[in-house]
Length: 445
Image (cartoon, rainbow, N blue to C red; front, side, top):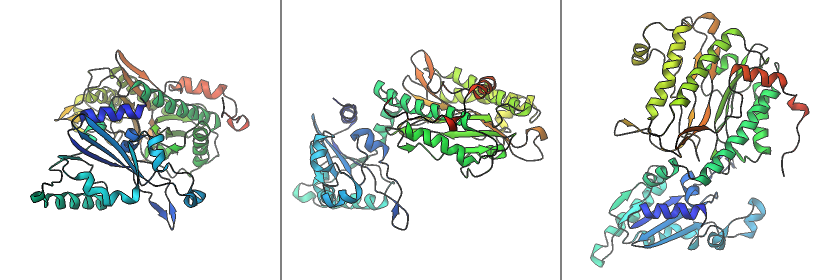
């Protein structure tokens, strides 16, 4: 049984009798007739293994009988000349273990038959307005046929109530893929520390990271690379990446490779010169302490809120020690006085999506961590060029982020191979060779 067959079995086990409709998505135009690169919906891929556009998975359950059908683009030699190979309807059965493969051109016409007399419909309304309207119209039309013993689904369920919980707890195979994405990303970060030099532009350093991703097997970025030098690091989602890196600048890189549809997410902040300035080291050390406190808090039974609080308390203590804020730590947290300097949460779920699916609070209670969950730990401090900020700290932004697995006895940092402390970063950068002179192929190793 493949991992996708096993996932479908778990999905069927959680289903009531009915039918689930899960689309892969449709390519979107970027400009003119140029499309954005296509990437299948994560839930669709999670259950099918496919990464093709214009496809639908149809999962039907009646008692103990289950059926998995795929509607997808048919084999078309002429189109394949232009766009490459397609799985085709026969490939749906052979490659993706569907019970049947159908031409996607039939899907709209087949909808009434697919939905007829199915008591429950699993579909994520609100994602695509056109298909929302079509499916609701078919459902309502079927209900008008009651006199001949026909009905449409009377109950609607969002399939994400099943898939999102499945995706939160990683299996052994999931974690193997997750570690691969983390390893590729870690190597790219070490390359960036070897490649940085004052005078290059941020996009040159970002290109080093993305080149390492590609040559190590990452087909996509998990998200647009952030490469922010100097004061740019105080902007959380800075992606212009076009400034010149100065001699005394700290460089914040936040990046992740997507390998096999699984995302990693790392942030490191390091000096372009290879040596931390005193104020930058002070900020970096406090962020590192907060990182360590939150990582220690990760364990089965702990709440997401407690992990956040552990790091937040350290950051607030640092803000007081650095003479940015004054007063009692609890009062600073209660009043959110820290928000101008730390405005995000301590981390997020990680998996097929960078900001992966799953709740953080249920019934107003913080979710408890379980073995198999993967989350990021990413404290930061950001000091913009503003009068209320001590002059020595202005223009410094530091974030440290790692990907952490909840284990039965505690936690494991999946990205532990990237230097993290100021001392380790300086030692690594001092001993490393020039990246630009040592680019060797890694394919086939």
